[in-house]
Amino acid sequence: MTALGFAIVAALANLIGAYIVIRHLRGGLRVTEGAIAFGAGFMLAVAVTEMLPEAFALNPRGAAFFVLAGYLAVHLTQHVLTPHLHFGEETHHVSAAAGVSALLGLTLHTFFDGVAIASGFLVSGELGVLLFLAVFLHKLPEGVTVASVMLAGGQGAARALLSALVLGVATVLGVLLTQRAAGLAEHGLALSAGVTLYVAASNLVPEFQAKRGWGTALPFFGGAAAFFLTRLLLER
Image (cartoon, rainbow, N blue to C red; front, top):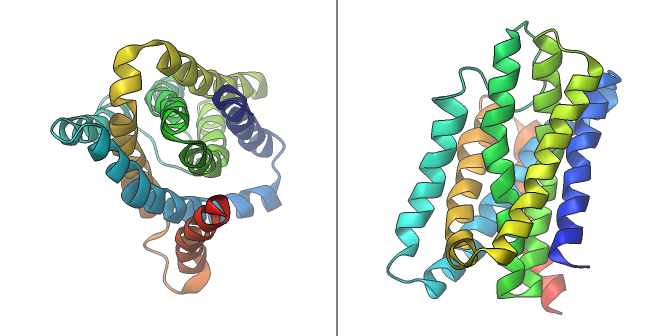
């Protein structure tokens, strides 16, 4: 399967997350809570042990700037320009404008999900698959987030599902542009590393770090362990 095919599969997870919210599937929402912790562990592991070393190997002097730029860009779009955004189900009423701003805030980061997948495959098939898995694991919570914010803002089910589709299209677009734009092909991995670090450490971890015990700690550490196991299997 090509990078584009993997991006389409990842995008489908956005739609599944939105469907869970629209259909009020409580079991699916409980799975999403565990997926947030598991995805955070997997993403942190892949960013620190794979993305950053490869980015600095490709561009030893300039990679640090692009990693920082990616990190700061996500904070700007999700927590400065967007007044209300957190991962997981939104259970409080918000304004309709909050739903639109949340969608816009998430679109940049989902675009770089696609950039990450494409950049990984430009380095190696193994890295591409690892980055696809990192993206896929937080796509379900993304879909839950954007759909629930839309519903909380008074939008209908169709609008909520459409918002998840927009996120999926942004991911596919990230792959297509990376394959065609020299700048993204050269610096996309470093930018995506900064984005991945932000999503894992600043978006996902705060959603469960206040909860004590092994309920969320186990899937969090399990996500990191799953990364190393997956890498070992791919190497073999």
